[in-house]
Image (cartoon, helix red, strand yellow):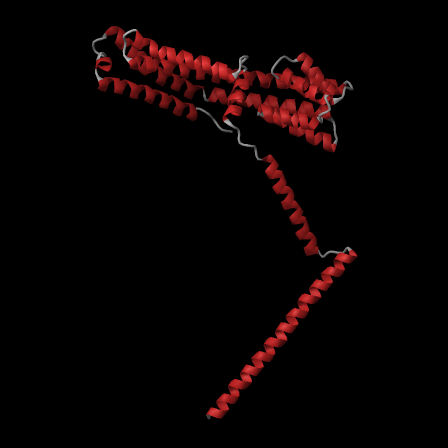
Length: 325
């Protein structure tokens, strides 16, 4: 092939590619313009394609899901709010700062008194730590007792509400009956709901606010069920009886779990009590044998390490004895 023929072939190829590209661009522009015009006509006529309707539904669902998830995410609590909630759960009559101030003052006094009386400072520090730990244990036990009392009272309250609704009372009247017949803490909570409803606040908002403030699972379940029932309609008395039955079943399951975890809890108590009891017995029977813990710095450090190890073991065994279900 001569050079002239090769040049003609290249020129023809370039012209073909240029013409084909121009034709492709024109067809693409015409297709885009046609699609836009068709979409504009469909919008003017109020007719949407199946794909458009599906995308619109997905978009609406996504927006609703995002809004629901944003509203469902709890706000991070501050330290003051956590302390206030701790005091409310424990049922303290005095303000939380006053209670913590008394405990801190008692712990500091117990830590300073041995040093003033001529004993080693470590004894006072250990005594102060014991006071703080004992206060925390008593507070945790008090919270557990109030939670158990709340569970029993909420079941009784739902029974009262179901009977009041079947007698013809409105939902606010049923809540008022609960506030009058059930003592604190459940009676006080429903009394607050009735007071807010009497002041003009919507009943659904009041129930939701109280459930978020108390952070109780049973009350949140009640608030959710009542809100759905008020929006959709239905037999409210039957709903109260169903919720009461569900809560009774959950309480029976809790008791069964406590029975199944009794062995691990007893093992925890025995393992924690053995080193403490042995140390006390050794101090009574042979004081000179354990005097090394008080007279030398190494013994003092060993004694402190033992106390920290016992506390760490108690925390670990508490975590292991909790059954998640």
